[in-house]
Length: 473
Image (cartoon, rainbow, N blue to C red):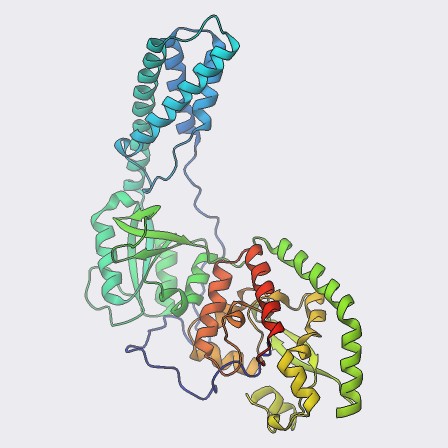
């Protein structure tokens, strides 16, 4: 689980994938980094009140047509309002798109109301004619009133569409932008294309090539939506997407080809899904509680083993049992990582900047055993208890290599959205030892994007299983 030897040599250039991505963000330290607007309140979703009033009015008309007491109205309205239509795939659905769901919901509402009415008034059961009349009246009224609400919302979207940026390969991004412009009912108006591959010269939407141009487009047009074309954009432009999300933009991943899966959302016919790229906060309390409970319990359980390792190291390898090294944690903040000393670098400069420490192969037998079994990592439980690290997360690295990898490997810097960990998704997939930094960054970002507390538990269990059959770290 150590981070000193987890990838191929940093001096090896990354593989060429045919075209080099164009970064719209200027290099760090240039003093010209774009400054997107500070966090703006997100667009308020459409209020459910008009539709609730429409459904309530339809239930009232159906009750009046059925001609029964007020208790039936209460049952009918309650059953109708609890059965809301689901799975709408457009911002403002058309009446015919909703009609099957409305009919099914009203039918269930009347059947439930009739059953409850029969239970409360067994001598006054609703007739089939009454149920059918009420059903027909409510479906007609609900359909008409909902069509009126949707029509007003559609007109508002046509008058004031949300300005959007399209990010992706030049040809695909221009194609998506042109399609969205041809179908204004989506409520989105592309105002710029950020081309990640190719020059993006062709097309009717302006191409933004620098951070300043992106900043200007966001401010002048009030951009509140981002359409990314292709999954690779998530890593190639992770920093830009995260900045846009933090400024209040909603980020959507658009499949420019035929989607191989049913889509819950569509924009101009393209399957899309919303991406959550804001800093990971949800579930933070549960993750931190798990860290405290597990790390505290493990420290108590393994404290005798830690003492034996420390004494043995002191007797066989001299003073300096604990190895301290600066690592980069969440949001780029440095912290001091602890582990048992299994090798001795020549000096601090070598320790901070050399990937494989000199004469590492000459470690004593006990030190090699600690490395092979990952027992040298146990002191990091104290880092977890202190809050420097988490049990599960991207492995932390030294500042020298974080700066180098962030410039060389797309998506590497985005790993620091979450607290670093002792183990992670990359480690349980075999990315230990001399394996790829590019692969590690991809797995780490996938872990952060799909984070859940149960996923942490699964990774911990799989890590424990690998420790039973150690392969070295």
